[in-house]
Image (cartoon, rainbow, N blue to C red; front, side):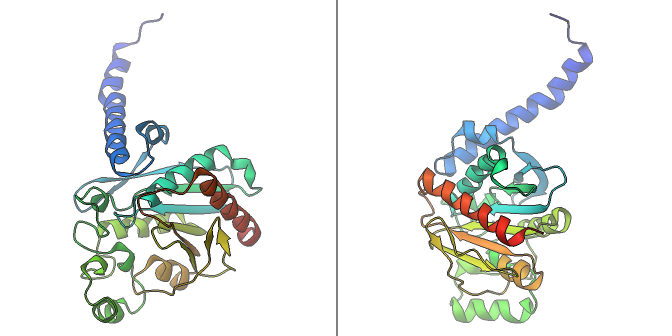
Length: 274
């Protein structure tokens, strides 16, 4: 066996080993909070540091499943609400499917998966909807008239529910800024945002919406000041498919997860193809 030069041993020790240790530590933490997510499944995802930090300094991780000369860029995000654990697991499952079922679509799709946008909320004890500042990130996007409408809606419609506080100003939170930066740099043609536990399918933006994903049927519930659907789908005209799983702690059956994925691909091919 050839000898490894000393300089390569140093590089391995300084860079590769710490990165592997970090990945193992992160996957141990995530598998303890997200149902059905094993450490092995998490490690197989090969999470990438997205160079963004939360309020408490946690790294936000993501994974790209690229395509050569892509027709579309699709951003899939989960756990923007930290107590919706299954939303993160569904993103992991679809990430695996995107890697292994690339031939299910004639389109060349560049996927970007962000399983957990709000890790501070996820790792709170108990897990909570808001980020570490107590802000509902899905009410913090800079929609038109946010300053006029967000606080009023929070006070009147939710009776100042602390779980739905929109924050001190639009786009105030580092996690919100991260999603906005992804929209600016990745330039998605579609955003899929996974939530729980209302068991519906929502849609905002141009194009004819999907009528169903698996057992979830379309039920457009309207828009809120500062919501991602409002900001991206209505204001920016980048369609947002919002998937509301039926349970925040218990995943759908594997067959249902696959059926939702197939329905999503079918709709993308039918409605978003150039």
